[in-house]
Length: 430
Image (cartoon, rainbow, N blue to C red; front, side, top):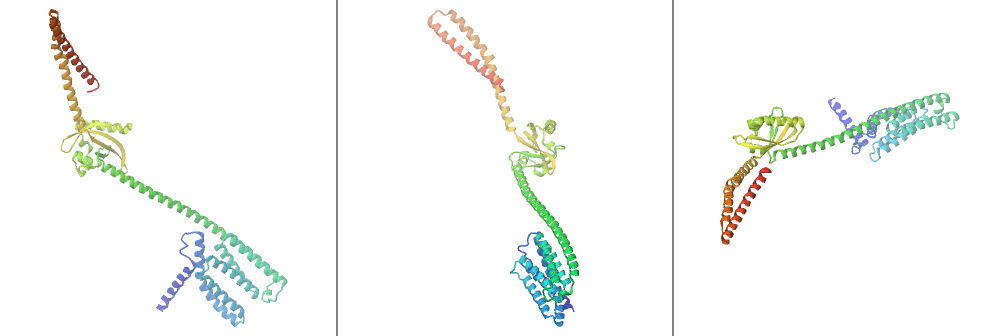
């Protein structure tokens, strides 16, 4: 008993794999479209229809043989075997198998009605065929199936009216009853075919819409992925520019001056470790006399969006004073507004400027000595030389005094030029 319970499911599973493998080409059925849906419905219909048809045909054939209807029994057997062979022939395209099956059903239904007088069973087959065509084919072929059914019904109406052949089973039905029966059959057939096609048309539109939306979503996902990559690359480049920059850079909260991030150059310049920096307030690296000016400058930067440089004094961890030129910019750090400053060490420039100013002061002192100390005795010498020249009698003495006076005048001119040059240099800022 247990073996039978396990045998039947295994047999059905093998049958299901075989039928679906023969009916559906998985290599081509990759896209979910109306055509793939139709093929799956066809395969599922064949999967469940074949066992029931076989079960129904076997007793029917036996009864027909016992009743002496050997020809009809033979037709049933041939039709069933032919349909199975065609449906499971993978060498025939699936569309061709559908067309052949449809043609076979039309022929079989016509034979049932013509030779057995089984109009009800024949119309059931034709009716089912119209629904099958409406589901599996285009609207044009669906309505063509209704036209074919109409022509078949019209043909049998002529046979019943004129009775050209000896078909006793056929003529048992009156023309009047057949007209009423066939008219209702065609009307119901047309209504159902129209309903099926309307349903499939709406389904196809929805599938196309979903496919379009899926493609749009896929494209958007690709674009987001690309933008994400670009954003990641940009973030990596920013990190590289920030951390590997030779200039000290500090990111801090503009409200409380808490340090948020620093680079290696800032660590080297101020001698704090990275951990110490991140636990330090920015105010601790500023000289107490300069902190108020720095806060005012930051506030002005925020309110007026100015990008002016700020000269201030900062203090290293060891207490050494560092003159710094600070540039500021607004950035977003971890989703929050923050400030980035670049603190360039200009201590050497300040020192050089002070040395130059000291030299300028010495030059000024020299110029003062030349203009006030040296020129006073020189002026006295010039006056004395003029007095001596008035008392000289000989030409040789006069010539010597003229040379002396000329040299004194030249010396006075040189001193004046030095004084004037020093005054000009002082006027331009030295």
